[in-house]
Image 1: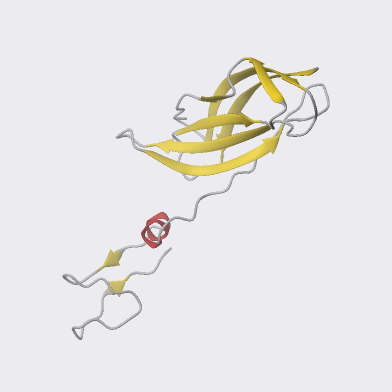
Image 2: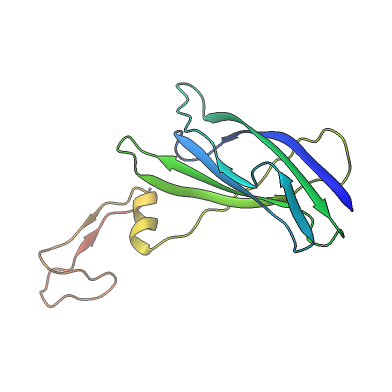
Length: 155
């Protein structure tokens, strides 16, 4: 039975629209893999950098697996979250990367994707300002009254 040790750290994240970030992570494997020691999922602390746009976590990962075959090689799944001053959390991006199959020291950069969200979430992300008249909520059409709702341009 082959064994795999994954020892490393989640260093941090940069170039996100907000600075107060934390990361939820998980290692996913195929059915032939058995966890011998360590945690296969976890969460970093929230970092609020005072300068720059990089949040640093230095969160350790130390996992030991045993396997009967190479199918289902481990993948690291990441979710980068923002926490605002009220403690509310918002998913900013998610991604995954394969754990290297060769021994040695590796530096892995994981690209993340952002959920698209609803029309309202997309508009608020672009800092759009919408002005509506009374109960009217019509975009791109005529309202029962002669005055259509106004939507300011997105910038």
